[in-house]
Amino acid sequence: LALDLPEQDTDVRTALNDGVVAIVTAPVLSAPPSEDDLRAFYASHRANYASQGTMQVTDLALHVGGFENADQSVDQGLADAQQALYDLRSGSTLDYVEQHFGFVDSGKMAGLQPDFSAKIHLGPELYAKAAALGDGEISEPVTAKDGVHLLVMQHRQPPVFTDFDSVRNNVYADYLSAQKARAKTDNLKFLRRGAQIQLAPGASE
Image 1 (tube, rainbow, N blue to C red):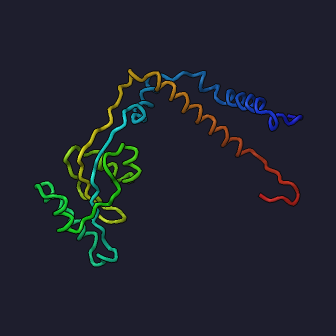
Image 2 (image 1 turned 90 degrees about the vertical axis):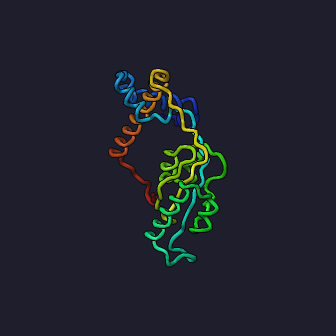
Image 3 (image 1 turned 30 degrees about the vertical axis):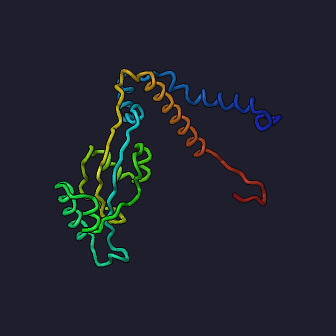
């Protein structure tokens, strides 16, 4: 430290870092997780142990309160959406619903998309509704900031979850990694609480 080697030598800096991390995470490594701990971790991170799902869905949006539909309220939009939903479930086409009720394809989804991409494009709320649909199903109306939405699922391949016993080793490694990361975060919070930062004369933050 007196020779300022951590700043000049990456090997020294890495060794010091590894030493500090080993001290901070030692309590975690000295207490192996129980089977219940691992199963609880698996249950709360199930999506990490599943194949990637896919979906091809049309997001029909009925915008309300905009320039072209300033006189239409959200309640009116919901009423139209309920009727459109009834018509679609009765066999009406998307073209009919778009022309008759003023719905438009939001364009958020183009073709078959993996779940992670669908979640980005649709947003968490619409994605959650879409993920629960099967082939040919239509969601109940969903109210969002930009209007009322109906989700029409053309094709859905849900993710396949791997059972706990098959991925136990992965769960064990992930659990330890998560515990070590939490220990390092807690240690940084502790150090920040006790830190006394001194500035040189004339210096500012």
